[in-house]
Every structure is written in structure tokens, then in C-alpha cells.
Amino acid sequence: MKRRPVPSRPDELVVFLGPSMPEEEARALVPCRVLPPARQGDIWRALSLRPKAIALVDGVFEAQPSVWHHELLAALDAGVAVFGGGSMGALRAAELVEHGVVGVGHIFEAYHRGELVDDSEVALLHADEEHGFRPLTVPLVNVRHAARLAQRARVLAPREARALVDAAVAIFYQDRTWPRVLAAVGEAWRPATRSKWEAWAAGGLEDLKREDARACIQAAAAFVASGARAPSRARSRLAPPSSYVRRRRLVEGLCATGDDLVSSEEVLERLRAAPDAGELAEEGLRRALLAGWARTLGLVPTSEEVARAEAEWWARLGIPPAEREAWLAACGLDAHELRRLCEERALERLTLEHSSRLLPDGPSWDEALATGARFRGRWVEEARRLGAPRRSRRKR
Image (tube, rainbow, N blue to C red):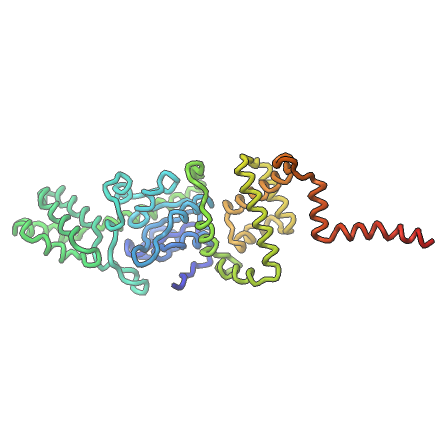
């Protein structure tokens, strides 16, 4: 399946939106970049825009892979505030609220309280992007909302409101329209009830998903306008990403080079064919293995050690401070990933510095220096340099 491109212009607020609200309405509401309903990998790719906040309203499911929890956690780790409400965003926010995703709206609250439990509540059939993702069926949450309002307005009795919801539940979401729902109610409503409903509904039925989408987008925009920083999530309660998650993020990522976006997968393809691919991979594997071993031994780098590793890295690359943000974007790195790499480098250094004590009868620094020099041919070079003056003296 062809990957959808992400626009290359940076935006402070990125909104994933589809049938819950027209794009034009969202952009008139607040300054934002509107992207189509999120599918798996889209949140990772949107991080290349360097947003301050992401409002997740609509997302795909069933026929296509849904937006992944790890993507939202990665956004939080990158210092991006994540708001969810209205549809898929409400569901994901309820699942991740303890990790820092901000849930907004009545639908989120219902998921969070356990009154709603799966995505079938917000599912609907809609048109494609060419036709603005216009909704073609009615989601179950909107039927439940209409039943509550009608009961509150004394249009429906409690039994009649339950009959309306039961009729909607029995219809597959791709076939659920108001005419079909009302036809399915059948004799559960008396003629007088139906007349009261028709008079009451003539003024229009409130779209709960739309109202929650509006609230979610406004909450995210208010956060951006406040200048506040996204709170760090509690990482101690969550295991580090698995190797599968790391590989997926690597392949799904984007690199911003000026006004262009390049997929990480394409960069990897070129690197695999490079003459020094094996050397680069071995260097990365050694660092990862030594850092992993250090963690199992309980070694933890200090903030100063991580900062020193980062400063040395920038110095080795020769990149001035004014150009570093653009370099990181081209490298496909956010602040969290940069820190992770620098932590690995600091752990690698700790392991090497304490090598003589980490193993029984471990190697000394001089032994390691000699081994490295012999493998690279430097030992022979130095020995021959030392031997040359002596041969010259003997000839005299």
C-alpha cells in the first residue's frame, strides 16, 4: 500500500481529521495543519513536522492497520502534547490517559469510565478523501446521544429510548442510517411517539462526534497558544520499546531535508548497498550490545555523562549549534531519540572505562589498545617507524 505523504511545512498543531468534522471548519476554528484520518505509522511520520501538539480525532480501522499506541507514546517522549477525542482519538486517549495523552469530550469520558468498550461505538461508513470524508452512516454514539436528549426533553420514555438504541445496535455500522434505525424501531414506538420524535428531530440532531472533535481541537490549540511544554510521561511504568517497535519506527520514519521529506526506508536501502555498510552496522551493534550489557549490570549514566557524549558527538560531526535542529530533522531524530543514542554512547563508555572490573581478570586499557592497533595494522606501522632509525644507525 502506498504511503501517504506528510506535508513538509512545520506546523505547531497537527490535526488528524476525517468524517467527524470538515477540514475547512477545523482550519477556520484554529490555526492548524489538517491531515487525513490516522493509520498506523502516520503519527511517527507527523513528528517530522516538529509540532508542539497533535490532536487525534479520526483514524482508520478494520480494513487498514489502526494508529499504534507506541506512536502516541513516541510523540509524548519527543515532547509533543497529544490530545484525543471524538472518534479513534477518544478511544486511544482512554487507553493511554495514564501515560500523558489528554482525553477531551463526552465520548472520551464514556470510554474512560468503561461505559463504551470498543471501536464499534464510533465506527461509520464515509466517503473517500476526494469527497471530504463525508459521513454516510450514523455512529452508535450519536444514536445513544440522541436517545438521551430525547428522553431528557420528554420526547421519548425510558423504554422508547432503549428501543431506539437497541434498534441501532442491531444494524451493521456500514448500513446504519437514521431512516433504517427508525424503521427498525417498529412497533416499539406508538404513532404518537413517532410524531413527537419527528417534530423534535426536525430542528436537527446534535452530532456528538462533531462536538467532541471541536472541543479536542480547541483544547490542543489552547495548549499551543499558552506556550506551555508537554509534561514528560512516566517512563518507569512502561517497558522500553521492543525490537519490533524500534524496527517499525525506523522503517515508518521520515527525514526532513529542506522542503523535502525522505522516507527512512529509502535511506536504509542506500546504506545497505554502501561499501562501508558492514563497518557501520558492526559499530552500531557493538555500541548497542555494550549499552545493553551495562544496563543489565545496573549501570546508569548521569545527566552530565549523557551531555558530554552529546557534546563530543556534535564536535566530531563539526555541526554548529544553529544548524543542529535541521541536521536532526534530516537524520530522522527527535529529542527523545537523540537522548537515547547519547545514553547508549555514555553507557558504552562506562562499560569500557570499567572493563577491568566487569569481568573476572578483565582486560586492561593497554591490552585493549594493543588489540585494536594490531587489528587495524597500526602496531606494525609503529614498530617499523621505531625500527627504521636503528637500522640507519647500524649502517653507519
